[in-house]
Length: 163
Length: 173
Image (cartoon, rainbow over all chains, first blue to last red; front, side, top):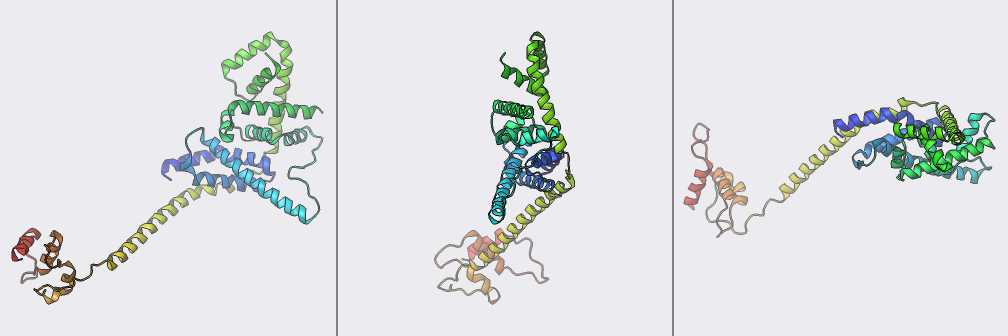
């Protein structure tokens, strides 16, 4: 890794660190895991720095790595949850938290209840602060799909709040 | 315009994805269609609520110092790769040396008629051409070097260069 790449990596880290941890926390709901996963993402980015093909932005590329790490983490958690469930009494699902009557909690819970595709885009937009283009790059889908999923997700949240 | 399209434009505007020109056009259109303002207000208000909820819920223990541990690793990785290369080159050298030692040509089956000087006998065995074949340039060079003797004061004669020794050697043969 040459000096320019090191500087570029440092810059990417400074720009995205906080947002990446926020995004990962949306799935983990555990700050320790979110921080560890973020570190894992940066290590992955570091190892594969030269493999970036230049399409889209580095940020989108990093969040694509983060998404893969998140999926792996979720699978591991699901497996361990299954193991616990098999060995003991039924446990609550990962995101099964009782919402307070508080508006904030209600909205947060409404987002959790969305379909995975819509929830993911809401997390990338609001927690990671990515643009439509970057979300499209990270998820490898067209921008139009990003817009429509986000719109459907927000409408669903609106409906849930109203109920 | 249909409701969904208006809502999407409203969402784009709330999320800062609309260009200034597009936003101005959108507002101009809304001014002419006040009935659409309710739809716009609804989706933009949801956008704001979701943004607030996500920001507040994720404003917690972000500890860059935990993630920052990765940055010094950049240098470590660089050093690791340098060390790896150095190890590969060293191994290649050692291997090459071993192979070179073992690949020394076997001595010829028939000893040549003219015995080599005792001091150089060992060295001449493998530079000597096979009987009946002309010596190559480098073989002749090696033989000439081995036969060359220093002067009385221990200094090699600078005038007698390798080419002259080679020619001398060819003449002798």
